[in-house]
Length: 262
Image 1 (tube, rainbow, N blue to C red):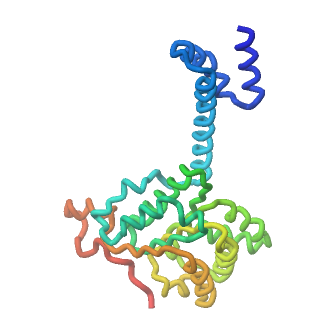
Image 2 (cartoon, rainbow, N blue to C red):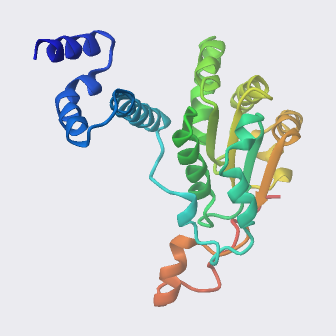
Image 3 (cartoon, rainbow, N blue to C red):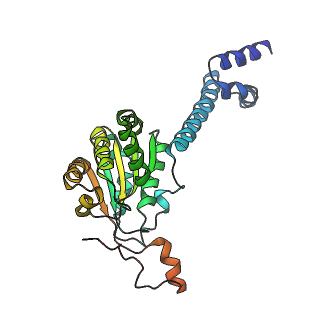
């Protein structure tokens, strides 16, 4: 008994609390199965490794600030046939993140852009990568404010940390030139260093208007698209599908892209 207590104390001192807490039960199980010492030790260490993996996953998930839980395997490819299932499966391996490539998801509201972005984030988290999800409006306002306070460099370091940065709903609102310049700083800083997943209902030709500066828009696109996968999703809105089926929403409006200002 003394040796067991000493082992438990030593495990705790070594920073192995899960193994320490389950030492008695694993000793009993090993005795009943007559496990060799090496197998008992491997079993005890595996408990600690699994617990640490789960703790790390939970921590990364919390820091990612995902808006909801969505998986790639729950995406309805039958409803959105324009989405290349093989490409999504390949992106799900996170090979793009390993190479610092970007993923750009374009299409009208409700076609599943954010679902796919979050699904890729979940895969990244489960593979041990750091992720941060942010709405474009919040990001741009944060960067604009930081630049106005001469703290942009400090704030950029925060957005440079995650391996995968998601910028959701880009182009819903126009941005001023100060915010556009700050966004360029972020994209340039992450270029070939970390991946960006960006969703937008605006085509690339409209980015100059959205950002209020065609030159800055061109410079941002040049870096985003250099190493990237672009998915242009064409289809109806998931959110309006049930409304359409029940006759509560005019079918002629479902799936239409927002009007483009000229």
